[in-house]
Length: 598
Image 1: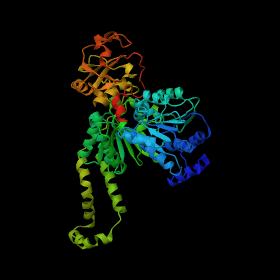
Image 2: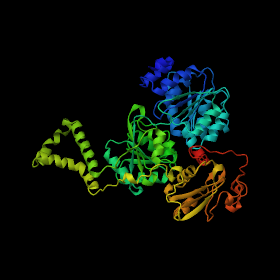
Image 3: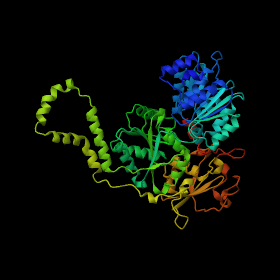
């Protein structure tokens, strides 16, 4: 099948041809005819890198009435990087469609410039939820004429805490609109969005629902936590042509791993939420140009990255939300290419492997961290290949040939080969000459679901051994944390701590308690106090309370809970009338700091 068979206009076919597209991908082949030929809502499930932007972008452009100078299409996406990327692709598709104007709106850029661009006559808005809400509030965006709304990477937007923003934006659009929802996975919260704002949608799945791309090899390596960095280095050295992303769970780990790699001579850099937009753009620019080989990133910072030819994805830690594994792995094997996803797993966390396998519908292959001999062998073969493939510049080296021959005439052919190989090769021999086996015996894996799988991070049995200290935090289920894993992920991401340093968590409606290792409580208090969630200050303090049920914290509905740390209204507002901001990917993350970043 060709693009012409899909019913596209001549202007769009001309643009597609100019961009070098020959045949539509599966999601494009299945989506475009329905989006052009029916007035129904639409749900398309397909992995990252399968061409979803063209699947919804081409039909949207074709159906724009250029005689009607108003916003007719809205595309919402989770990150500024993805927003810029979609707008760029849409503009390329609309190159020959005279009168179609696409404007991107996202945080980190001048809102005044974006308002001027909108007033200049935008037909299609591509936006992040936070900036879109801001522009609605400033009366710069009005959606009464919008006939089509696309929710791209819907699962990621919910994972990032944009549920309420999405609801608010959708409620500002007319009832007659069509909603096109595209996502890599279909968790319950995405299904709720579909049921609330879509009527009997057409549903198309490319591959297996919630699965990973077929051309990704999924592997895991069993190593102790202290050996993770060394295992990562060994894999990098074992794949000489590697171009990849290392995913860490916290900003702190991201920066630490990137700094270690750079100090050890690797071409690497970090991408996380503490960087300014200018710094983020600079890092991504270097990665796209391949001037850095390894990008170390958090899940949030890496969402929306669209870089071809990524060969490897490493999971330094598995994500708190298993659905994120699919998005991480989807950074590789794009546009029909193959890729490798490797998770570095400590034995205590190995129970999560079965959850990942269930999520992607595939078995993960257990592989060993390469030995020093394996690495040296691969590097030697790379050197030999480079020698075989090098193009000799005879004219350029001609003035030096006589001097070279004179300097080397005392060596035999065999000696010359050994010396030239050693010039490039000695550093690997030295680095790995005493390297031992860091792999853990697979018999130490936990079978089935361990306590970590539910996010509670209990590293000990429920006997006498507990964490050293216990802390109180004035957030709970009413802030959108449906389970302990979501709260743990929020704490780790905001405070930059390792989930392994948090023990038993007691999660209640309006507050929580957790056991923490020595020194971690102080870090939590320093990092979290002063931040806010839903216009209310977060408060963390040490506590000796060990509540049973809700008795230590006051009434279930979040009323007076002075015994658990004061009246909730003292933190910035009565919560009466509020609805839960929960979402399947880590509720409570839609606080103002994230909105400002988007």
